[in-house]
Image (cartoon, rainbow over all chains, first blue to last red; front, side, top):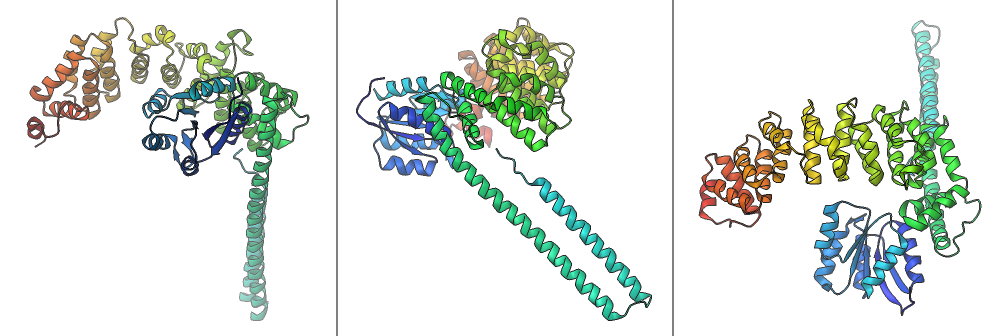
Length: 124
Length: 406
């Protein structure tokens, strides 16, 4: 992957293993990663930054990532792509995420290369 | 890790306090007997009474102190462990993506971090994490622990770690644990088995043949939901195992769970096996088979007549599944049958019939409109009107709606 100028990315994920892996993988590819581990933290972080991409988990300790997605789309429109990264594999979850405005959906466990490729496509 | 240690200490303490209290009461009783017999004076009795009361207070205070200290120590230990795991997750993630080498002799926290990485990742990095788990001797140690006669807590933790690591070499041991006396161990072994089998990459390298897995799972005393979950966890590798469970000797519980799992995994290739079970003598199996058809969206040949028969069944759940399956029948024929089912005594069947009409396309929509206004049964009219309202095909202020709900 080509190294580009620093791009800001908001990662909303409560699992610290996933956060660590995604952060390291993306930072190596030129992203500046800001992470939030719950919904309330996510709103605060999103308020103070202009991310070029949001990676969002669904099952968060204080609510559903869908709530954030809906509010984020209402406030920011469709300019910022959102990639949902969730352990939920059911069809209705994927469909709901896409209906609420997610640009892509990945399930856990995930492949790092695949994540990087999808992120790369979304920020382009 | 969610199981706490120290149960044995608490158990021994409780037992000791109980025994000491019993001894104190026996002593006190003896002193009262002595007093009533006139062998000791009032002062002697009072001294004994006060001594026993003070001793009781000391025992209980010590007991509470130990319990509180134990809980505090467990919490501190957990917090320290979590911090260490956090450190190792960072360290191992970096190694996984850069040097691709694992530090030798990982401490306990490092091993937990490695298991967590293996659990979260798929593909190349996940395979690398598995290699590290094997290199560290962790896989051997986990298998040894689940095989040993150690306490249930140790075994349950080991089973949880095996599930995270998805160790194919643990499959024979997990199958053995499905016969364990403890239901808790059997359940955790089933979950671990599902995840380990899901990770096998081809049919040729199964450590135990699928038919053997089916046989042992079929004989294991597992709750229906756990068996279903175990099969669903097997994902794309579940087909052969489920096929083996659909035999004529399987119990109703096993058949029902296997059919449900096949439906959830959309294993359409099993239609040849499951289609036949639509006429199984047991209604629960009949219903599960129809639900399978509903989930995969295909009906076997000749199923229409069976469905027609089940629409008249006294069992509500069977009628619901049969009504739903009519969405896959010729719309003209289905709409005729659904006009009858929409007047069913059960709300659930009526609602399923209305939703099925909705799925039939223009024919169904026409029938729904017709039934909403002209069906002789008022409950049928109500159900259709409600669906039309729910879908926005009729406005709430429509005079016909007022007339029906009045």
